Amino acid sequence: MTDLTRRGFTSLLAGGLTAAVLPKPVFAATSVDLAARPGKARLVPDGYPETAIWGFDGQVPGPIIRVRQGEPVSRRFLNRLSQPSTVHWHGVRIDNAMDGVPDLTQSPVAAGDAFHYDFRVPDAGTYWYHPHTRSYEQMARGLYGALIVEEPQGAPEVDRDEVLLIDDWRLTETAQIADGFDNIHDWAHAGRIGNWITVNGDGRWRTTVSRNTRLRLRLVNVANARIFALATRGLEGWVVALDGMPLDAPQPLDSLVLAPAQRADLIVDVTAEDGKEAALVSRDRDGAFKIATFAVDGEARAERLATPKALPANPVAAFGALSSARKADLLMEGGAMGGMRGAMMGGRMMGIQQMAQAGKIWAFNGMADLPREPLIAADRGETIRIAITNDTAWPHAMHLHGHHFRQVMSGGSLGPLRDTLLMERGDKAEIAFVADNPGDWLLHCHMLEHAAGGMMTWIRVA
Ligand code: C2O
Ligand code: CU
Ligand code: CU
Image (cartoon, rainbow, N blue to C red):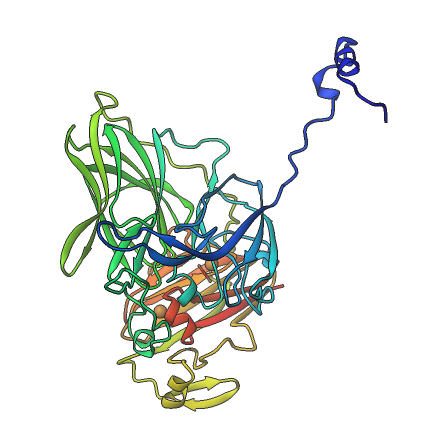
């Protein structure tokens, strides 16, 4: 190898070599650290102390990871907590070894240890990351962040792109995270419902926009268990993607229900008058209240822009014939007011009292912990249908790893691609998907206390 002095380099160029034959700078997928560790956050303003949290890089939310579709993500996960952890990349149709599920796809990362996550993201859209070990505690303490995958082409034209991670915290009077994560009462009811709502870790999230600005809002429900019923004021537009996946056509935005783990990409125009406020509001029994405020200052343009086009589709396989698809049934039972008498645990039948003592109060197909056998063992590429019955008194947010599915509606039409489906009490729903991602994949309720309490099974794709 010759020593390329500055002079030699210049004369090489002068000698007629074009830039194309020079070695290109190598941007190796340099791995960046992502540490789960304790930190402080100002969740509650005015007169309250900061809150002691656990966060990725010590922050709530963790850093936004932004890549373009097909690019690698490489992070050295450092566990600086006092208990084991992992990182799960929610909604990414990922290589199974990178899915972050302890004892199914990897060993838990012990306190003080590290694990390298390296994978490519096949789909553009709004995804997120969170631990999958004691998630009901680790996520309640603030461990989560957004993974945004940009469309290489065909991205909608917007003036601004905002990621809004919506959380529900249970805080004490001094604004500290209430413990009692293992409270069996919560587990048997709706899960850990909080008393303080934040957007991006801020209980008074606020920004300034001008009238007729077009925004892309990427909403993620990162709460343990709260279902958000959302609406906008002074922001008008469309839902363009759900759970990361583009809708075939933008749907006019009215109200929007986001169950835990669900996402929605909105394209909205600021229609509130100059000097007024637009808002994202959350509705519950007590009324509607603002969770994000957009103060309107000035006017970006005189008129609203035209209706956006659909986002470019992601490369998800088309379904095979549904009539000949392999089928499985999934019966959800248990919880308060559910009348379940017992279930199998560790291969033995247990009464509900015994189960509750072991922290299990829910069951899938009569089994209250991760079964030895998968719910379905699919051949690669096979189309699978799962008919789910919610025979409980509670809503559940059913999430499948490694794949997106569609709901098969009565009459046979198909719903949008999703990775998490909200099922109300008593609901029956059938989902279908192409099992084209090899490995072992969880199927569980994303109300985290329900998952820990027994609502978990898995599928195997050969
Ligand atoms: Cu968002 Cu199994 O997880
Ligand atoms: Cu997931
Ligand atoms: Cu549930």
